[in-house]
Image 1 (cartoon, rainbow, N blue to C red):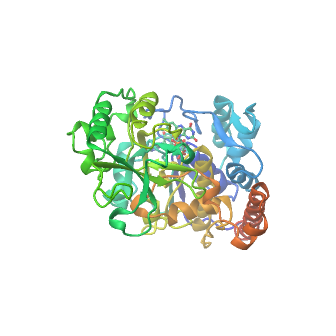
Image 2 (cartoon, rainbow, N blue to C red; image 1 turned 60 degrees about the horizontal axis):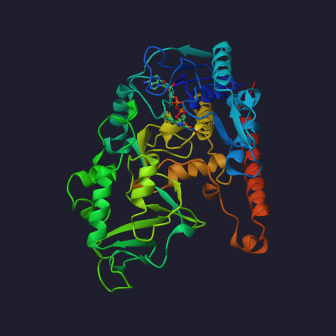
Image 3 (tube, rainbow, N blue to C red; image 1 turned 180 degrees about the vertical axis):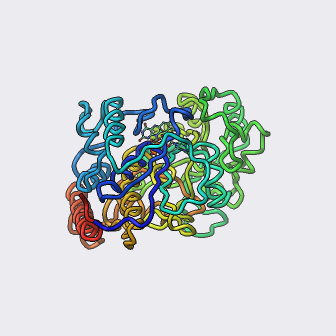
Length: 450
Ligand SMILES: Cc1cc2nc3c(=O)[nH]c(=O)nc-3n(C[C@H](O)[C@H](O)[C@H](O)COP(=O)(O)OP(=O)(O)OC[C@H]3O[C@@H](n4cnc5c(N)ncnc54)[C@H](O)[C@@H]3O)c2cc1C
């Protein structure tokens, strides 16, 4: 067992923190795990238990060769505590892994509390200064205000986000392509966007409908002020009838090839995934009730029969601009002994949070024992997550779930040969798992487990 030369503290005992602590302990390292509940709670948590699932009880698909399955499969191989306890507390949920949430959290809390190498401290952490060892920040989307300010101080004011604004997504096949056109503004670059043109009367009717539409009732985490950069469209419309036309619906440089004219206003749709089977409405985050969104957004030319795959939302979500701040081992570039894990690091979802907790725990164990951390291989699901959060464009970074789009694609020559999509997915998963197991093997010689 390597000798521990630096102390490790982990802040936050949600999904990522306990997994990180466990990964350190199984390598024989002592850890302090801080959790602010019950002294201070969040607007979403209801108990003082670790690993509380604040909304759904689903840990997503467990169908073989799906991306969420692959991530779980890799975690099981890496002896994830939370995966083991999720399996023990599973409830029937078809192809998904869903758990008895109370039993799951209770078992995680008990197991962590019973581990002699993990010291649990029920306290809010508000400062990151003067700690001589390795810190993992895993305080989640509802990080306490004092610590959020501290992270902002450390990372820069423009590198910590407080809200997630989600634009609606429509199915490509449901767009009326006879009413829309592809164009790039001022014909610069490739014509990647679908443009839905509006005449003056259409725009006026749309603004009027938007002003009258019913909003979602606010939750505690929604009450704070919006950032100017992600205002909901109904709020922009409220500021004046032309504000949207000079904002996300700006038509300049988007000549309609059907009429030869610049429309009065334009709604732009951006391709959502590599399959090009869905498009998001650019800048159309909003806080309207879902039924109201369907009614109002179907007034947009070309979207009269739109099928919505996701509606717009705005909710509290604290996360860092990971591409600007982190390395693939989840260390801060500027402060390599400070690591981020969980939703705060820019991933989305329970399973992804556990996975980054697992990786951060392994990196912390390496740093504490003077071993050079090794990033998870790109082809693996873990490596695909870190590749996304560290390699995305910092200017438009949005948290992500694990999906097939994030995984390393097969070579074109193989794709041409293998036409069966199921088989291709299987090949991607097999390659991912082989690389993950080779990486685990390499780690186990450097950082042996108990
Ligand atoms: C309202 C809501 C609904 C959600 N629904 C879903 C869903 O259905 N499915 C899904 O996959 N994901 C959902 N999420 C996302 C979900 O929060 C994450 O997937 C997951 O909980 C993130 O894990 P985490 O460990 O990063 O953070 P958390 O699980 O939130 O854990 C962070 C912990 O840090 C503690 N903490 C915060 N600040 C401090 C501090 N200063 N000092 C000490 N402790 C601190 C908190 O009390 C908390 O226990 C939801 C999020 C919210 C806010």
